[in-house]
Image (tube, rainbow, N blue to C red; front, side, top):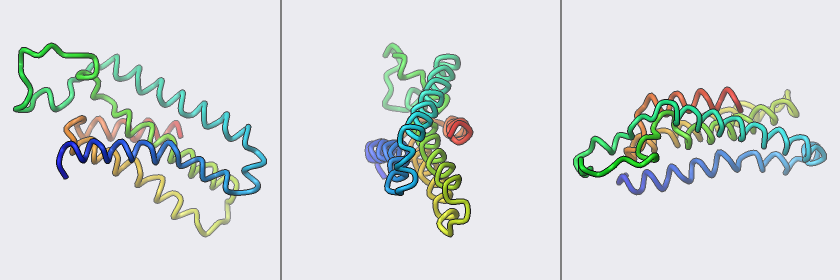
Length: 154
């Protein structure tokens, strides 16, 4: 991967994790509970986003690219350049993915698909986080913390 490709692919990981709960509404039973599930999902994403942004603001950790050879030291840092901890892509992707798996499991406790649903929920933010590190946007600790935050909220 090139850095630019990793960054673009990590965006797709974010979109996938955030959109995954839409699959819940392919199930007739869950579709009947659209309002309840939808409100719970909105709450989940607002909490995950709020905790993520509060943490980013509190730590103001410089992103790895700031220390890279392409960075001009005289360049003034913008707020986005100091928003490494925690990874928002990873936390939001995890929140959406784990929300999807939790709701699926609650509605289908005996489903043979549950292990695959949980594996997908675990994999989407993990790959997203890996790509964020690969793109030079985060340190591994940023994505681990973002993963934990998002998974706990989701």
